[in-house]
Image (cartoon, rainbow, N blue to C red; front, side, top):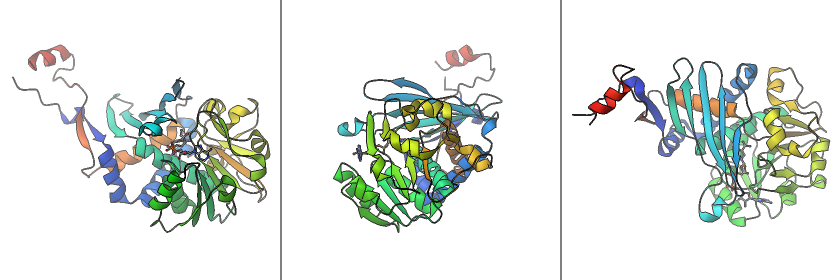
Length: 349
Ligand code: NAD
């Protein structure tokens, strides 16, 4: 007997890595970064509507595996993501991810997608959204410390969304800096390769730290950070994994995604639990202040929050409509009689 054909509602659109790359080239990376940024901004503006929880993390000596769920009441989403700083030594990536959206009314999945590339896009779009609001007016130069997988995406988002024109690259591994410089050569950005973090921050209004090391690292020391800069600290995103000297945190006004998660994972894990921080969504809605003067050091203590993944998945769900950039995936059992699951299995013999 032939296999029963599942109905259209049982097929879930699956966006593979290959589809995601084609989608990026179809839309263009700058418009896609701007589109995801707009979607994140819209969702941050309706922040109270969302279910929120710190991500569920399973730690090991070498890394972490996490689940990041949220829902706006109509759509539910989650991401699976890992963080393994030593992976690159074995030819594997530090961060890989995939994610899913579901219809809350039926519980049926409506999108299944690769999210390794999408995470790089959404992290870059979130950084740029924060910098657009918090960085000094007219910022043109960014120091990019840590030139791994995220770094080109971060640079291009700052160009597309904030309008920077120069990136100053530094990594402890010169091959990583070479790679980033090569990848950004036709971006229109002025690229300066630096031999130290101190050199990279010269003249930069925005400092992005995006290094991977499972320890309390000190990528920036207190004396390196002058008045008025915006720091976009991305790499410290796990308990015991930070990038900034604590003294910097005491001089900065700190903006976070979801405090309950950031206090566990972010730079502020180094501070007292009641140290004041501002929730970034409140700056967007106007209920909290962002940058108030040109001497202020603003710090976006980014760890990555589920709503950003939800926004990025919703962007992809809409963007693939009418395209071939997905495969209908037979991942939901769909018996003719919903209660006859066994009969469907038996007839498939
Ligand atoms: P990656 O391993 O590809 O790159 C990290 C780079 O940091 C490497 O090139 C490494 O040589 C460099 N590095 C390590 N120590 C350094 C130091 N002391 N000074 C300068 N460079 C140093 O990793 P990736 O995918 O680019 O991710 C970077 C970090 O960002 C990871 O820790 C990851 O967990 C984090 N991350 C955060 C978010 C977020 O939303 N906040 C999202 C994605 C990744």
